Length: 149
Image 1 (cartoon, rainbow, N blue to C red):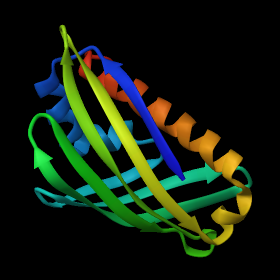
Image 2 (image 1 turned 90 degrees about the vertical axis):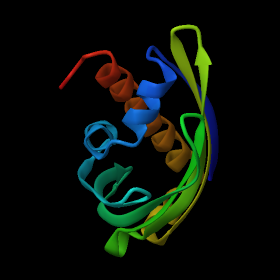
Image 3 (image 1 turned 60 degrees about the horizontal axis):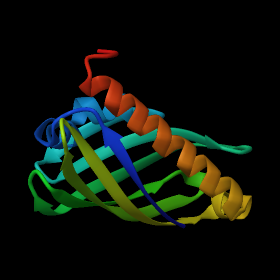
Image 4 (image 1 turned 90 degrees about the horizontal axis):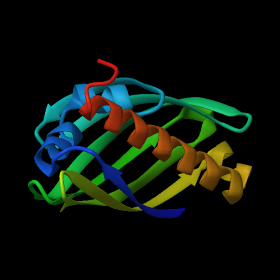
């Protein structure tokens, strides 16, 4: 699965960069995130519960940040295992550009899935992924603008 997009966030680039590197902010913004722990400045462990169509699973995984170029870009990659539901692995290149008093966040995602999830069909996977991404950016924008604490 490949997905790319661009979101305008009404916050300065440095604030967006800080939020994208803050485990507490990420935990609050990632749909279904039950835990997110920083193992090192570039390694995190996560537990995320998601439902895609008829398949609901809890994924345990590790995330690594690389190609760090603060506050402009980084690559995030990871792999999660969801037991019988299958696995997901992939990465995203994330770029931040100043846009007046806001920030344009662009992303290119490449992901692979296996197990029961892979049997659901690419249309369902793609639409769910877009919905989860939209929820993440909505929550991130709200956090950065003093919304839900």
